[in-house]
Length: 329
Image 1 (tube, helix red, strand yellow):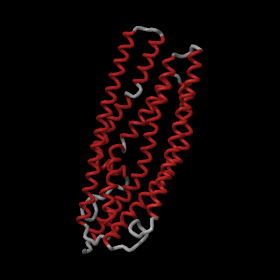
Image 2 (cartoon, one colour; image 1 turned 45 degrees about the horizontal axis):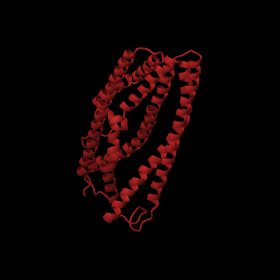
Image 3 (cartoon, helix red, strand yellow; image 1 turned 180 degrees about the vertical axis):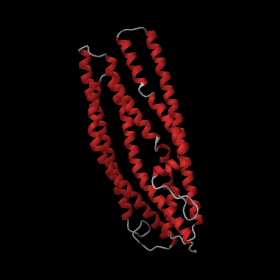
């Protein structure tokens, strides 16, 4: 909706901004993401067939053709990923450029006396906060679609090969549904607090330099170090929780692989399945680890960027209000 000055107001959420600023590009990124994840299970099937041919002492010509098909599929998948990543980068940088231009435009037109703290906020927005907000635009929709599609296609393929072995391996991912959201919320709380503290430091620093602010406890010459210590404490808390979560996720993955090897090996010895099936399921479990971790990272980034965007939009709306009031400098 347009504001008082004729400018369109900022969308209420980061996803609203994404759709308004790059809706057509998001649709194109979604198409590329679908094409990539549709190819994700094909290399597993080709590996399975090669191994079974070798175990059965089949013709080398068959192995050669399967290997060539494998190279073709992987080359196609990686080429699509290259296009996707470059396109994401362009969308992200275009959004950063728009946000920085928007801040500069509103700051220039604001008809009010800007305090040192407010100037510090604007500097922080242009130099720091616009980049993660705009950067998230490139992966906002395509990343969960891509990684969720990879997870879905690989899981379906594993269930098709041997549903019992697949379910046994996937059972070790269930605990992550419980502890990952809990740990992620703890990280998000600390990250959000860090944003607010750093904003206070930026505003206080400019106030101190400009002579408009007294010693209000901010970082600087003769000031207390509480804000800096607070940022340090928050960062260390994030590191501890993040790497503990990574440790637990990796342990669950390796337990899943071990269980699939044991159960699958027993079935091979009983003559119920082929060796290639065990290899394909184990490889599938390995292929689940990265997209699952990427989805967790995406959710973390969404939470942090959402807070940054609300603060960013709030300052812009404040500038619009100031323009509407028309207070003289």
